Length: 180
Image (tube, rainbow, N blue to C red; front, side, top):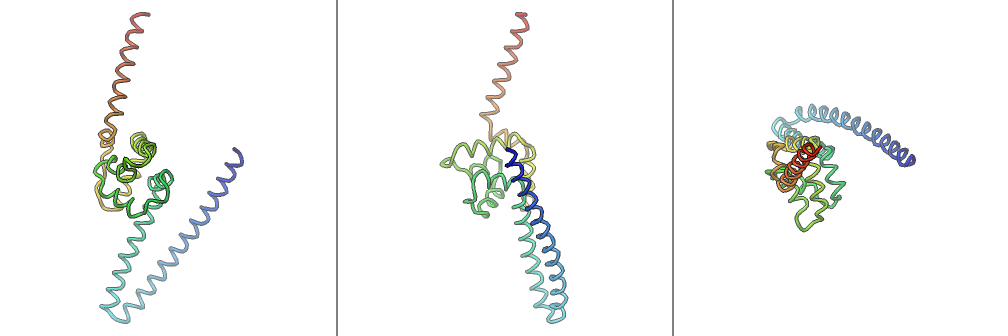
């Protein structure tokens, strides 16, 4: 167990170093972009303006992709389901989902492992952080958030079972109080 802790700490330190290097490269890239824009605007106004605009759009898409890949919900889904889901399928499922259940059904359809479906639904149902991260991805993609209560519609059977159990426990507690 201690060895695992040391391994995790080492991996986290390596990841932190890598992240720092990536951030530095991003800044260098930004500087180079500004230099190139300055050179291009001096060469040919229309052509350079179109090139700069298309590059800005491309870079914005790259930033969106990176934000999604860094998101906790994305990393959870990829860890749970595996890397065999193409990124564009994940993004499309997030965009098209009207409920959390829609997303789960698209990513882990009925033919897939039911434990994965249940895990994803339960994670979304039980953890507000998961719902928040899910909706952060939707915000990056420019689609409206899904209300937190929609998960209750997706897990209606579970919610009904929970309500029945609570009612049964309350009734049992009431009987126990009367007999004491």
